[in-house]
Image (cartoon, rainbow, N blue to C red; front, side):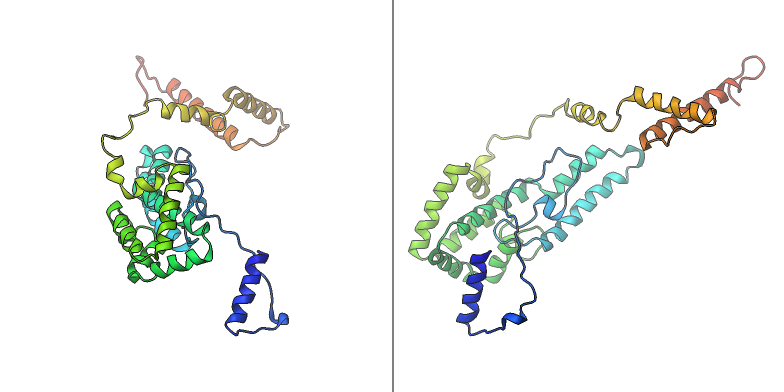
Length: 292
């Protein structure tokens, strides 16, 4: 932070901008995580915005990307919630995750991650050459890279592998020779360190040859249910014991505390079952007739 502060002071002085120390009301220290892991798509919790890592990995922009992504997530959740009794929270979470980070978004993000890593590792001479070429592109092209999310202006210039190839060739032709050589060397180093992420983003069809959808996992739902039983279903025997303790306390005129939400739910279910059983038992007419 101190380095950035000193750079700011030098930049202000270079442009002849003066200010009094007494006019400084506060200093802002801001850290914006860029890149990193995407959300775990197997969890039921659906993240949004920064929690979903929609921060642009090369620019730090996030607000517009969060707003643009929220529409699809809301639509996916609404579609599942509208099923009423057929609502499946696992399906709702999966639909929201699929809307947020489909394969196309992840491939475009990999391209931007590479760009951010490249810029963060270069000296000022290379950065000047890079940005000179970058902003020499047409505004919808460089603006689309800075936005980098479906529905935002210019994103069509980066949303597909063919668009990314076109962008890469166009900007490379504008690079000064030293920047171009540095860029190619970094591409090789990045691929060696992290695998073919950037190559998959650019030459997507090559990596999709012979690759079909993953086979279904019939045991996935059961494993998720077992994992949730610990804190959703809980210890059924212990909850039944708690219900009996509460009932005995009420019957004896000495209440023994308040039920937890889960115990209260079980108590309501048992009371409802008992009421239905009494109705069945008292509903038989002459000759053993059924419920009336």
